[in-house]
Image (cartoon, rainbow, N blue to C red):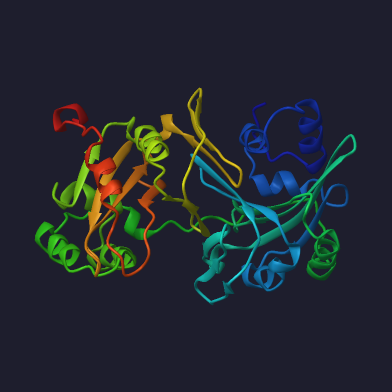
Length: 352
């Protein structure tokens, strides 16, 4: 279906009825609308507009009990079953440090919220869904059989907005000026700043200070700190981690949130272009064909260097990131270093 004008809510609903097996993101793409517009078209039917504030949601999130938290970007989906706990709200960054649900939230990106109810026969599925100003999904919380339904209903009632319009008008995205013309990388300055890191969280500050993108930094810093891997490295690393029983950390995020799994993984399955982790409390789905570059990255810390696997898309944006699990104050596990350093490197001539 090709759209020259924005479809009306009734046209959106009709298209959805005509394509019952199509995934929501695919329907939105076909109609050239945001996913939030797709959900908004159901207001008064299966959806309710609610306050989209991240920190207001976090004030009540623990009441829901066990839920499935879902964070995704264009190329990776990260689903964790657990409870919201150890919540620390902040103006610019909020933290959830639960045993299973581990999040870094950037409230400024959260703008719109919906409570969604889907009925399939006797099966009723409820969720809270949050979107940015452009209508792109930031985070979704799906109820489970063990969830507190009374708490959910109370939250929806308290957060319900007077505006229940079925129309959704996306705000124009403000392009980052820094994303324009590339600035030559000062390699000496980059290596100097990199070498003096004492915590991996300092990395973003270094990039901002030097006005350099992540991909440009990885390409420029030198192979003692970053080296390019074969595209199959992600799958190989996961299988090696399963064999060793090594606990790992898996990060998937977007501009509004980063969701983290910490622990061992067990069930790795490939289905077409999708590389999947299908464990009891973690489902991860990765479009391997979207990965343009895969890097092994070594960053200094106060506890010695740590090694990450970082996969970027064609735009140079982070799709997914992995570390070996470690406790603050302890050195990185030698088993993880061995897994990373034994992954096949991409020859420079191959990458050219």
